[in-house]
Image (cartoon, rainbow, N blue to C red; front, top):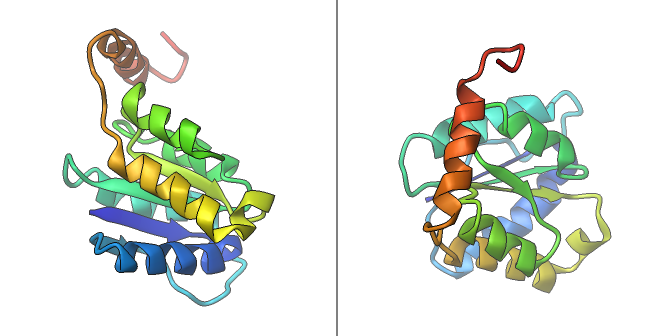
Length: 154
């Protein structure tokens, strides 16, 4: 299942992505409202999306804020989440294949967000690629070790 959510800046982009997911018969869960509320802060949305992504191994997330950066930072604070801001299909493919990313972060205020075909290609690439494993396992183990460190980085 694809879990999707956006802060107030990404409502329209989220709706367009949901239309794509529906059209492609991809199961999804929308964890946010469709009403404009400037108090819908991206850290709260990140927590909602990522909490649901972590419920099942095969879940993926799509998290949207103005640039994709803030929400990716917030998503990556949760142990087990590997969120990636992707602005093209190549980044989306390799976020999944090399990094086993489980949350795609998008920026609603970016020029690319205006192009439905490009956004759909990014989403499709993220959903339809899978972790390659092998030589990448060592790197993901190192990321997991970092997650286990205390706040001082030790």
